[in-house]
Length: 118
Image 1 (cartoon, rainbow, N blue to C red):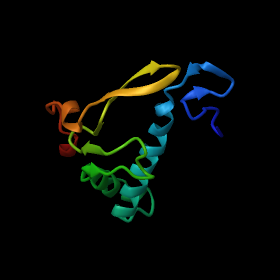
Image 2 (image 1 turned 45 degrees about the horizontal axis):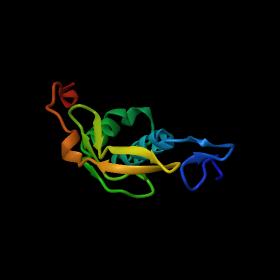
Image 3 (image 1 turned 90 degrees about the vertical axis):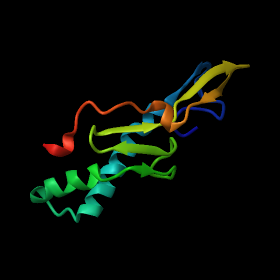
Image 4 (image 1 turned 135 degrees about the vertical axis):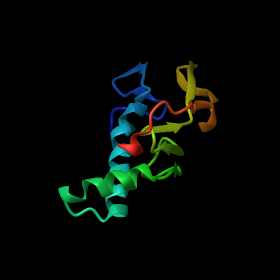
């Protein structure tokens, strides 16, 4: 409730306003990817920018954790894209209920670019 959402995923000010507030975690997860890349690269300042990029591009599987609360992810360094499960939800009896979860593999597609060569 500290962020304005109750245990049913609805706004604390209007129970008919069911929130799908998952977008709130995108920035959190991105910052944790950058942090992990900086730690892996031994980043000290702008002169280490290339090492940071290479460290992030080398990442792949990211397990569900406090750093990735939306679930496990797979990062593709060639395309700089992160893939995760997709949650198909519907409102049932005033509650947001997950009716289907895709696998990470369901969300993958062929690479059309390779940023690691730049």
